Length: 178
Figure 1: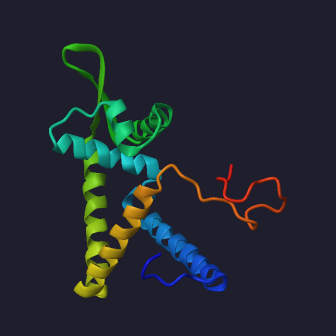
Figure 2: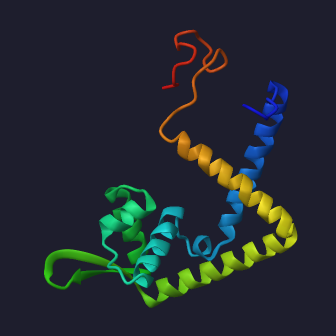
């Protein structure tokens, strides 16, 4: 922790609680989106955006590709697609020259919803950036890149347990929590 001041337990607990409250408030802001108003789940939203991005890149949006892009399983993707198809936002099409191949495509209503979502997102982001000002936005981005680097470096690991992790002593100190 070269050059950084360690955080004492009381400060950590206060900051943790404030962090969690802020994250909940930010998450609730997503409930005001056109996707939420249309009854689209967060996964459904990601699927719509991924299909549109692939279409705009000139690629065929195959289900496996979309599942990988949004980081979900084929089963979860299938459930999301059923809901999106039922709402008339996505359709499945046969791939020419591949009798078993299926491509996903946005319907006109699906494309309109994604364009509306992007427009509202960009307007909120512009308002936030204007509220913060260029210097604070630059600082926020610097900190977020640092958080991303930490997350990338620690992907797939869990924090070691200490005496506060469990009420009993069956978990060894320094071992990952189950």
